[in-house]
Every structure is written in structure tokens, then in C-alpha cells.
Image (tube, rainbow, N blue to C red):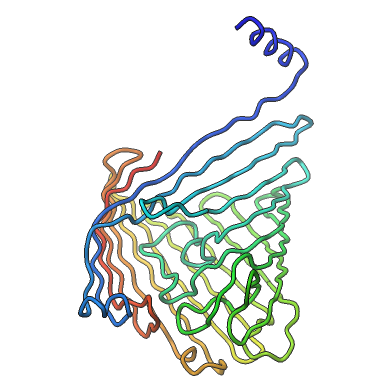
Length: 334
């Protein structure tokens, strides 16, 4: 005990820094009912319902003061915790200071539109209207804020493989590496520049991304322009976004609208999304898909909530498709 106290005193006297570690997470469980044409739903006669885990996530965050105004921050998440196993979540390592922040990361992140429009809205549209998120490895830089403005640069490459590219579940078709690539697409890396503004109730973000090794393969990506924003009126928070992707063959345009209304312990949310594709190589990819989500949340405390949501998707195809989904959930964060 004395040796421990002496060692701590020496470290304190020398100015050595200590890392601070926090553990946060979320566990959400409840009842889900789905109807539609997806293979998993059709196997149950067109309807599927039952109890199950919606979210199980644990995140470890370690930060350290390096001195001289510099900090290091590591984030590691594990998700999908159940009796069947544990899945890896997003992870990152960041080095920050007066010069800005450099970040190395591996993960799926959140969808630029439905998951990133300032956190407003109802039910996510990934893997239904928008593409399923794939894991990527990335390096990025974000500048300090200059009057609310920030500039970011990033480079990404795929960390997992995909075997197919069909319907709503098709990835952007780009930057997918590992043991394989989507059918009709080559391994591509992406480089992007982002301009953001956040001050007071307004937050706006614009991004331009370009892919290498475009070649002549139809499903290879060429470039993408994205913009999203949100404004907090106090009585309601509105968000919107638009993303346009140019492929070697064809185009894809995604649109998103969302609203969140706080009413004391109750928060109401709604979102709407649309994807229109034209001249794509696969006929199943062309056309328009839309989705609508509604959500009501009642906060029992700062960490525990009751959640009810309903979503409907039209024009969606694929094994994971469902024309509608209803959730009744209990959610606890720590």
C-alpha cells in the first residue's frame, strides 16, 4: 500500500498524465411485428412477430491529456451481445489539439441522411430505402471551428466484403474490400472533403466524395455530392438532406425529411425518405423506393424510456424487406 502511494506521489510530482476511461451503452428490448414480402417474413406466412433484442451496445472511451494542449482519445464498441455471440462495433483513435483532430477509425458509423441529420426523426431507413451500411477503414482530419465553420478531409477503404448488389440492400457499390467485392464492382477507395457549420440552433454539413479505379465497370462509383442540415426551433427540430451519387452507369438520388417534437417527457418524431435510381446496370435497382417512420418516446428517467414506433416501406425488394414494422420497446442507457 505504501509503495502504491509513493508511486502515485512521484507520478503526480512529475506531471505525468492519467487516462480517463468511461463505459457507456444501451440495451433495448421489446416486441416487433413485421408484414411484407421478405424471405424471412414470408417463411412465417407473410407475418412475423415476437420478443427480442433491438439494441445491445457497450462502448469504452479512454481519453488522455498529453500536455501542450494535445489529447488522445480511443473509442471501442461491442454490439450484438446475446446468447448467440458478440459482434464488434465501431472503434476509433483520435489525436486532437489546437491544430484540429486526426482520426483513425473502423466501423459502419451512421447513415449520412437518416442517421446523421442532427438526430431527429422516427425510424431509420437503412437496408430498406437506403443502402445497408458496410464497415470501412478510414483516416480523417477535422479543422478547429472558425466562427462555427469546420473543414474535414477523409480517406476510406472497405473493411468487409459483399457478395451481391441487389435492390435496397445494395451498398454504395464502392470501397468494399476484404475477401471480395460486390458483383459488378471493383475494389475502390474514396476520398472526400467536408464543410460544416454549427452555431446556435443551425447545423449544416456538405460533402463531396470521389472514388478511384473507376474504370468501365457499370457499378463502380464516380462521385457523390451530399448535403444535410437541421434547425432547432425550440418547439420542434427539423432536418433534411439530399445525396446524389454518380456511377459509371446510372445515378442514385436520396432525399430525407425529419421532424422531432419534445413535449415534456414525451418526444414525437417522424421521418420520410426516398431513393430514385436511373440507368443502373441491374433492372432491379432502377425506380423509386420510399419509406415513412413514426416514433413516440416516453422518458421514465434520464436513462430509461418506453418507445413505440411504426414504419412502412414501398417499392423495397430483397430478403430483408418488410412493407411495415411495428415496435414496442423498453430502452435503458448507462
